[in-house]
Image 1 (tube, helix red, strand yellow):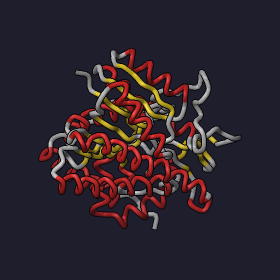
Image 2 (cartoon, rainbow, N blue to C red):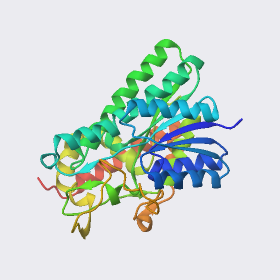
Image 3 (spheres, rainbow, N blue to C red):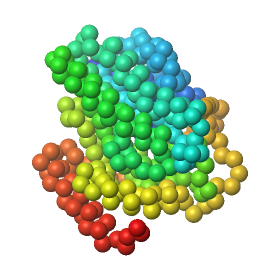
Length: 336
């Protein structure tokens, strides 16, 4: 019997790559996103791999729309086995340059979208006492960086929300599982359409990884949801271990380097379309696919992903990476 999967944010980036991967595995994939062109492209990817696709235009900030999409998914394919929350939006700017309405919008999509997806999934899964929910998180959910206060706040909130729900499921003795996958910088189209008020074009903080690497980690977590969380990429392991031991040093380091590392050398001249309030892929021919504009600088593999799946080896490797990061920061010329 085919696996039934729902993916939010499925029109581009990690969500798009994950949808294509599940399609290659013959799954029935319900695709939720706002942009019509991206959804149509994602549906083609799923069907080209041998799966079945159901694209549903959905703004995850609207709970009734998410709930309705869950109903449509089950009407088309039967009980939902896996629900994957990916959808987000962001603003690249210092807090002083973000309006309250913009901050609220990021929170409604990037945090409450996960809440809505989890609520809709649990409403279907709990009565059957089975199913898995995967939250696609970020290293920035535990180590925030400048210029992304709204996004980092939402990702931190997802951690707390997910921990609370996990405890409730354990209390109830439920066989429904919920897990987190903490991502590194990924080469997705978001950097082409994110609302940015930076003087230069935005970029992911190197090292950068390809969305297919992230998709494989998500699929593994969906098949093994008993773990609290998975880390993807060497940079994620380094960041999270360093945050545990040298957080004040990281504050100073990121205060000095965090602005330049999130911008390319290219001036951001003129107005760019952004997807904060409406999708940029809502007209035919505007499908952006899974990849952003950093293919020549992105890694398709990471040894750390293997370590993340093996607790003892993974813990030892993470500690070694963290110690290495501590040594690198300690020997770096101090700007303070």
